Image (cartoon, rainbow, N blue to C red; front, side, top):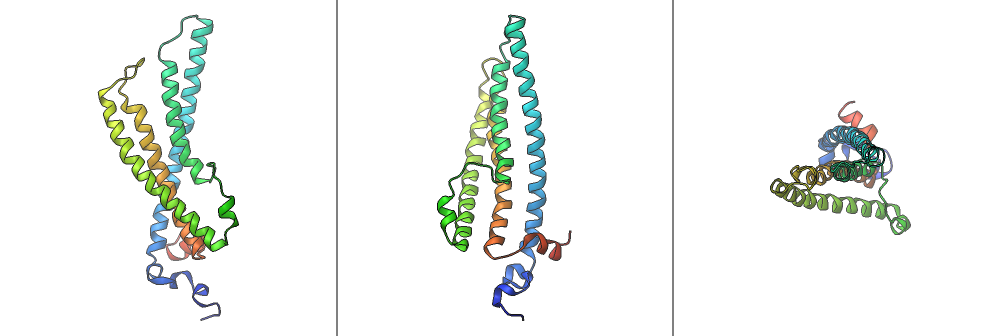
Length: 198
């Protein structure tokens, strides 16, 4: 064995879990699901913004040019905005664009900072579990009530919170794996290709 002790060994030699390649195989599945969910979130975001823009322009035309405002565009635009916010939050989470105060974590020693970042993401993952559970329950109650102007079941606007939370949880799982790898000095990109194959 070359110098450097445990941390200088080949990645597949570190620990029992990693020797089996289970960590890398699981991460590969998480990575693929994360990529697909991000593509889905991006496509949904584009479609939602396009429809919302069309609806708002339509309302402006009817209100100020035709002089006969429609009753439903403002309500639909509001619900589409909720969906945009929650679906878009997963894409922002993936690239680290959410607002955060990091100056304390940045001052910590690198290993401790990595551990704190990992614990924060684990806490966020747990919070998303709670949010999914309760938002789904609230969405189901929406079948009993209808929106004011469009008279559609309130399930559809409310389930956007659940869908967005699931997408965020998928991205969090990917980030947790990356933080775990960084904590133990593992190069996931190279090692996954070596252990699992591209």
